[in-house]
Length: 65
Image 1 (tube, rainbow, N blue to C red):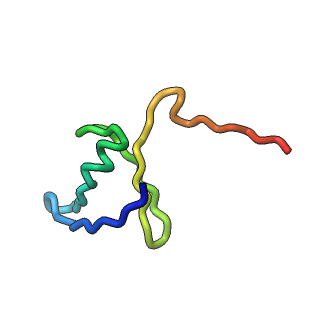
Image 2 (image 1 turned 135 degrees about the horizontal axis):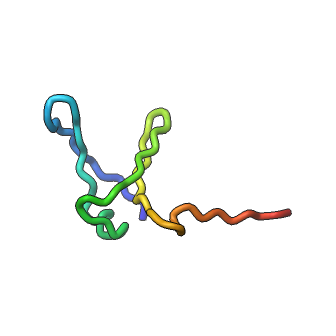
């Protein structure tokens, strides 16, 4: 589901800014107002992903060779 969309940064209050997320992605990720997202900062770009809670949130599979 790769897409390139333009977003505008806007001020909220005196010390913060915000950006809206595309509603299509919100629906795709099954998010609703109040849900948490993770923001990963990496040099010149951000990665935003749905944050999952509970035992299945961080499942890793060990691959032995």
